[in-house]
Amino acid sequence: MLLAMNASRIELSLTPALYDWRSIKQHHTVVAVDVLRATTAICAAFAAGVEEIVPLDNLEALDHYRQQGYLRAAERGGKKVDGAECGNSPTEYLAMDLHGQRIAYSTTNGTVCILRGSDADRTLVGCFANISALTETLLQEPQDLVILCSGWKNDFSIEDTLFAGALCQRLIQRGQYTSSHDPVHMAMDLWNLCHNDPHAYCLQHASHVKRLQGFGETANRDIAFAFRQDTCPLVPYLHDGVLTVNHTQSK
Image 1 (tube, rainbow, N blue to C red):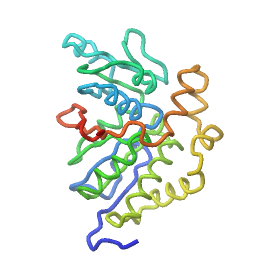
Image 2: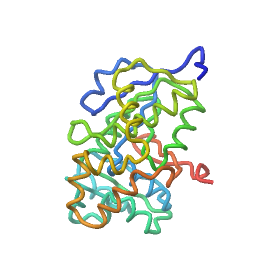
Image 3: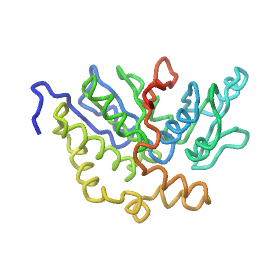
Image 4: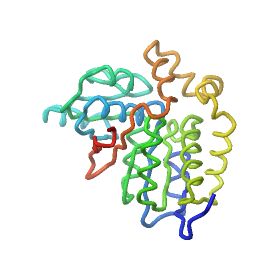
């Protein structure tokens, strides 16, 4: 690996609660991660034709957007909120025709994480479903990077950390990024430990996987889907509080 003279730095915030303690404070990009399931579902919704998604950190604002013609998508504790048209199942989104639709979206962890990182120059959405497209986007315009994992209610999660390790390894191997941040190296070590079958590793060890397994067939299908790479090769980005995507990225 040939390291670029002015390689951009990577830091990893394992939970939103750690974001304020980052060293990278000035110009930087944030990649918000909630593998199970919000960021995977966001990528799936855009792949299904959604025009825009408004991430919300509360449920009260949903009715305001409903009055403007948005579909309401909401989840709390892993379950769809009563009254919402959609939850946060990526496989359900992919089975829908959402062309031209706009979604107002609120989840337990993922949308909170996205909004937490909205102070960055760029706030992107990441998951295994878009890892290659995301990697190339970050390499096209290298900038100091903070990967912000949503975890579970401000606690660490294995699945988000695994994704962070996979992304960091790809970026660092290409020579345009570097890191001296302990969580980055820990995450890459974890990824290398189980990269042949991260799904199986998380089935055995990840508490959120075990939590979702009790929610039925759709949730179990979502778990398997969330660890498949490059199923939705789009990179959603936040601008003025709205997530959108350049659909030409999927071609």
